[in-house]
Image 1 (cartoon, rainbow, N blue to C red):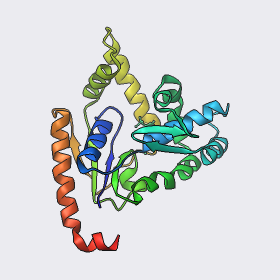
Image 2: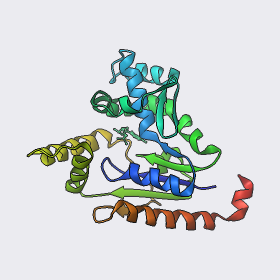
Image 3: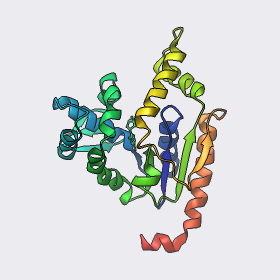
Length: 222
Ligand code: DC
């Protein structure tokens, strides 16, 4: 059994790395951001103000949120596409900033790795969700590189887009600053000059040696 925490800001290649590593290790991938996005969709659908912590948490507590085969579910509905859309993206930082909302989702995020281990991706995976992970990784990249990648993903290639995306990412960093926490024992990887496969190769090697180091005695205890 292995638990890996991968954290870092938007646009550093976290999702690609976490999804790919989970595939290579044959363990679940728990995208904690997807939980906040699904909760935000539920909040918006309920007509609740995303800046109202108590009301948002009430919605989050009662919503059935989960992941199946890499897709987010809300009350049994596949909402993977909806949670990546602009409405949810515009409100998710506000919803995720409420401690009551975070408390409402935490155990469901943890449940994803309880049975078989897994790769947990987010902002506070290594500090809050799975602080006893065998391996913690913090991914970084320069703002210009993050913007360049995001532009590629979104197909936003018009003049001035890079500047706009750099500003958007900086605003998101500010909005997420409270919950963004690097564990002291996290390995920092700057992904600027690395291809996705190279990041994955490093992560896989580190995860496999962390699993070996955790040894059979721990395996027996779990
Ligand atoms: O990784 P992402 O862009 O899908 O995350 C969506 C939002 O959720 C982002 O604004 C930060 C927030 N988030 C968080 O507060 N804590 C996490 N563990 C993961 C995401």
